[in-house]
Image 1 (tube, rainbow, N blue to C red):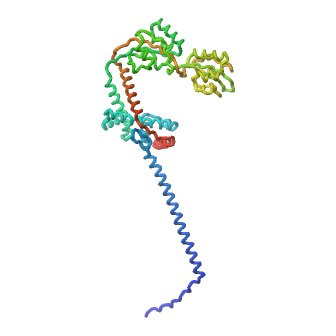
Image 2 (cartoon, rainbow, N blue to C red):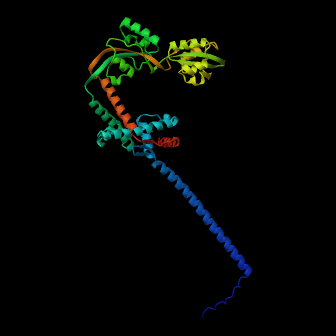
Image 3 (cartoon, rainbow, N blue to C red):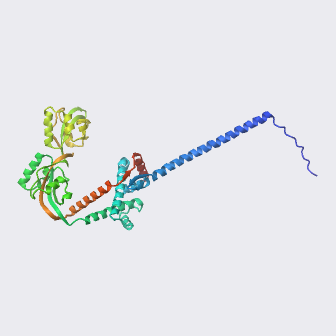
Length: 417
């Protein structure tokens, strides 16, 4: 028997008021849902955009060209890798990178530029380095076998081959002079030294007493004109009669390890002083300037005219000096003990450098002579420097590293340490 079906009871139709209410609710719900979707999509797209921009910035920085040498580009990625390898290979301490990152960054950029110029110049001379040579040197050094270290080794090997190239072009003998030299501080000292040399006939024995440039003094041996310490010395060496001593030759560019202070303390307070100072190149000059002061000369005006100390731009004025600030014991011994407003006697200071002096040159022999090892090394160095200087002058070099980019590179190197 079939199941009796219930009679369907028709639901009442919604009133217009109910229908309108439902429609409004559905409309609001749709608006809320759509707004939520739009908001969520916006958030996701913004986050995605942010991540994209960050990735783009990082990726772009690595790919950015920061150095160009005659059309050869070097990216930031290469620069950072070379920064890391070069500072490790040359023993640059981590503390130096942290405290003087900008300076080290410039040093690395300079190395990259010069290494590339060296490669291009060597290539013009048909000088190359084989991969096997790089492999062998890497094994010797124990350095990692990667692009940066391979380039460092390549540059070192190229330099050795270039030295051989320039050395092979030198004659075994050439005109040279065997010279002895010394730089003295003044004409008066030069006259005194010459008088003593003429009596003792021993130039080098008096070097210690009179010379004020330890870098160039005494018996220099046989040297060709090209590598004489200066053109002034060279002119004397190839013109005066062997056995004779030159007249004092003034050289305004010569550096000497001595200077003379004139000091006037204007005020003392606790452990500090205010002072007027000037640094002169010789005792004679210091005495002459002191005489002008005694005759009513203005200390600041004379300091601006004669002093070789950086304070000359302020008329020699130094305020709030403490012992040790000048890095000179000779200065401190006088400045912190002198009577205020009295100009000191000239204070000799061998811890400073001044310019201007007089060369004395004695020629022992002159003529055709075999190149000594030092002479050959000097000539090779000069010829290479001249060659490289010309190469650099005729090159197009772009260093696009600004302060911000260098700082970024330093951070990346430090992150990897």
